[in-house]
Length: 365
Ligand code: MRU
Image 1 (cartoon, rainbow, N blue to C red):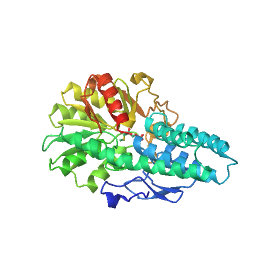
Image 2: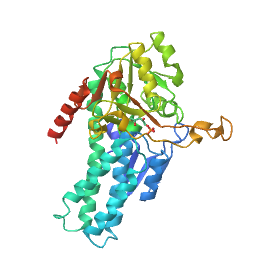
Image 3: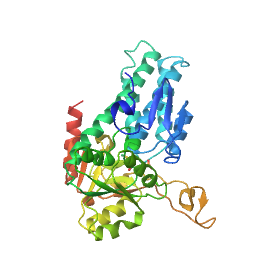
Image 4: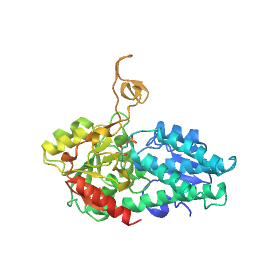
């Protein structure tokens, strides 16, 4: 199996490409000013790349981690004493990767899926090299499934968009974040492709500015009209009737529909509900964590204070100021009009519609 390029697939800029065991990541820390690649040639490199947000966005983190684990499997196959030793070391690598970012469940989902597949068949494999090759095949499959999934869910989402609508989004849920086409941005792309002429208000998304740096850049590539706004401007825009629908991605969705996404999403959902603007989440089924009943159990990553006290390396506050920097918040299910997935648009009560979608997805495998 080969990994196709983004040009071949027409899905936007892919966050990663593969060259043998080397994984080349688009360094999302420097976009849109510099387009640079970051070569992940070891497990340490990949752990750093995920932690430091060279690669980010829940689905892309999952895919990158799967490739990181598969590449490690190939390296381990050259030095492991036997299958048991190989599996033990692969498991250690999986656990290390899973600790890099705690909120996005796709990271755990992808690395568990890959490890379980290798482990399950280990007795039937002749040697560790075959096991490592299986790991790489599995990573490629996870990657290719994402592209199909995003396209399908985006078509479902596009049906919610009225012609000439202004859509508001937060953070970046485009091709860079999802490994092809996008989820929230995928819906917007599909709406544009279907001739609905959408325009987009993009929240800048402090403190890391994924909106102003990445979403604006992706929309520009697609020639979809975009207007950049500060995160605090949504109430003003909605009170003036300028936003018809809000769509964001998600990093983890609990069984009851509570959804964790980039910090500020909850504020946006509250403002949207106050103004009767429908608020939607777009995410693949792999973002659902059915082991978690409500959003209260979703771990929220806290990041370094410097993300809040500086901008582009320049200090914007007093030295030594106390900082709180949660990277995500949880939007309660009752504020969400629908969850756009590859199994269709899930509606409240989510406990039922999510359980049904999970069954449907299981049956299709
Ligand atoms: O901290 P990030 O940039 O990884 O956070 C990304 C988001 O919050 C996205 O909205 C989310 O991962 C969904 S991407 C489809």
